[in-house]
Amino acid sequence: MDGQASAEQQQAIIQQLQEQVQAKALQELMTQMTDQCFNRCAKTSSGDRINSSEQGCLAMCMDRYMDTMGLVNKAMVAKANR
Image (tube, rainbow, N blue to C red; front, side):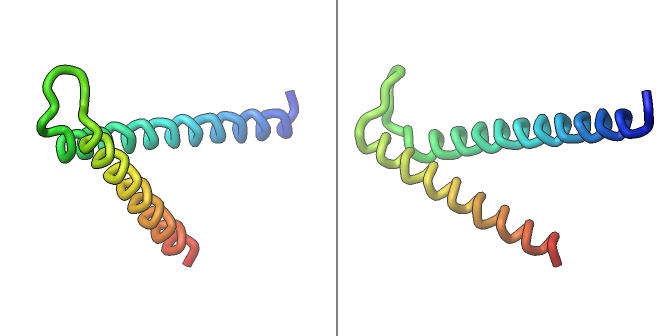
């Protein structure tokens, strides 16, 4: 095996690890968002159903959470590129 194949294999491993880290970060983000929004919005639910008001609250909360995380991400990328 020559040095080029080894470098390509290393790059493939690095890319796979980066994808795994990104997937884990997304999973953690979704867990945090779900926990926070559910705790904020689903206060009156009984059993395994939420009412329409709670559904609207959850949708708004999740939208705001995603928008905020997008802004934070853009700021971090901009700062890293300076």
